[in-house]
Image (cartoon, rainbow, N blue to C red; front, top):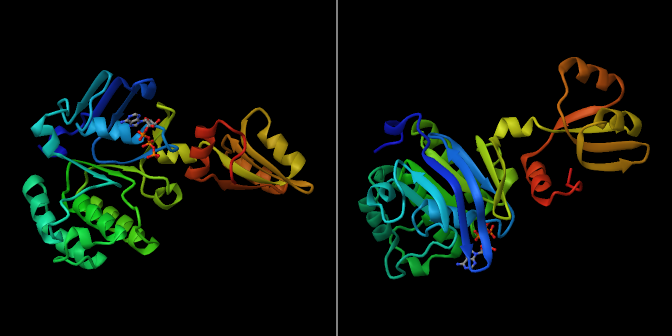
Length: 301
Ligand SMILES: Nc1ncnc2c1ncn2[C@@H]1O[C@H](COP(=O)(O)OP(=O)(O)OP(=O)(O)O)[C@@H](O)[C@H]1O
């Protein structure tokens, strides 16, 4: 099955999903869908439940309760579904004695959409030594191997769980670049879980934020960004602009203020605000995620 074969149907459908580990509730009655051919960001603080969710989506664990459908079936022990999923985790383990080329050959056998030529190009781009044993790779090189497999597998559903451990900034940007370029040519569903929100914010089309086992944001990235603005100017004018709206953050700068406010402004309003000395800037995705997961009014502007 390919991503196009299931067209408008959601790739993932989750209803009332909960996962408990003893007295820890890692996921608490969550429901959402994942549409085909989009790049999703799965974001949230440490321990929010992201990895647990991805483990269940990819059949590596089972839920305590609730329903889950991935690519038209339940993922657990479902070979047809699992063949079409590629899950790359930060803590990915490989058989240490194998060389890079053996790992890539094995991935090619397992993944129906595997593109060997693309994998070779990525090896070249990331300068990963083909003949080196996996156990001799540096931490960053091991992450690179995961990233190459995740991209070259071209799975209809690809999940990256913080795949960057040890990757330097150049390698991370190379990953973002190759991901976007290949996604444009071969659209598929990609779920990216990361704490480097600013770095990936331009890649994401849809954002799901998990907080303490619950979904607190499930929205298009553009819609999310247009939810709030940062207003800077004379304190009185800024406060008048913010009146009646939720203020995510406010700081005083002498007689001036800078506030992140959950509201939008129309074009004519923009002109009036400029005349009153107020500058409006778009809010960053990272600030919004911090605001929604801390529940605090203090966020870094
Ligand atoms: N096997 C397990 N046994 C007990 N508790 C677990 C287990 N796996 C996860 N948890 C707990 O479930 C909660 C969610 O963990 P999870 O790893 O899903 O978070 P996360 O959002 O991926 O965090 P991070 O960003 O730090 O990777 C945490 O409280 C964690 O301690």
